[in-house]
Image 1: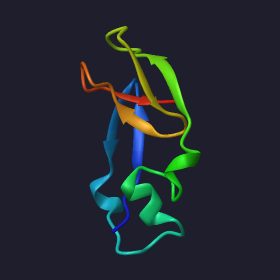
Image 2: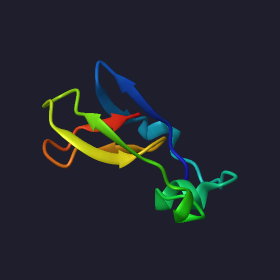
Image 3: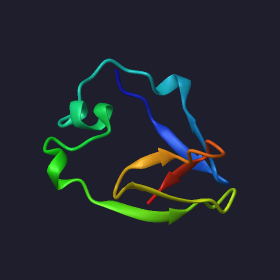
Image 4: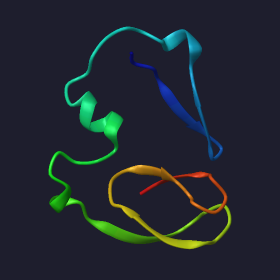
Length: 74
């Protein structure tokens, strides 16, 4: 299943009318939120734009802040 996700004023949503049954190239890697080879994962230090907390996350992946649960895309 594939959907369109968008960001507007710092909030993330999806378009319910965009739900479709198709498989994208590399979809499994996107769904697992990890590279095929974990040894190539590069961790970076980030500061949450919502709560100013500092934490480490995988570079290139959208993840939630572990403190306030807002999405961070770096």
